[in-house]
Image 1 (cartoon, one colour):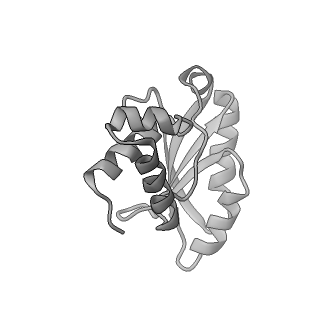
Image 2 (tube, one colour; image 1 turned 180 degrees about the vertical axis):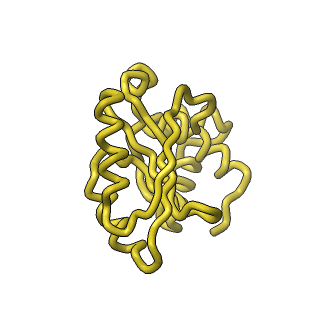
Image 3 (tube, one colour; image 1 turned 60 degrees about the vertical axis):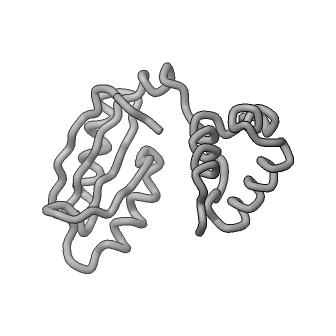
Length: 143
């Protein structure tokens, strides 16, 4: 996939606001509207842009209690544990990592009590050997 410097600028603008009108994108990039539209279509066709998503407001997110849950799993249980975690709607992101832990789940709950219940629920899943949790106090950079 070839991504030029202008394409990267375009992707950065879309990262700020995926609903930004093409005319605004064109003006900010110093390109014509037609050129920007063609770049968007190419990036979508080439699979660089897989879709457009929702970005929640800081005000809403500040009302949630979020945590990283580092998870060590038993051998050969990755698929089963991943499927179980996918079924928990409060698990917003799941990363496979190297090191002493196998997975990092990012979870979001309405309260500390709910977060505690979720962490216990994850720890009780078949195939989960150990968890270590860190509550997210604030987000300093989000792109």
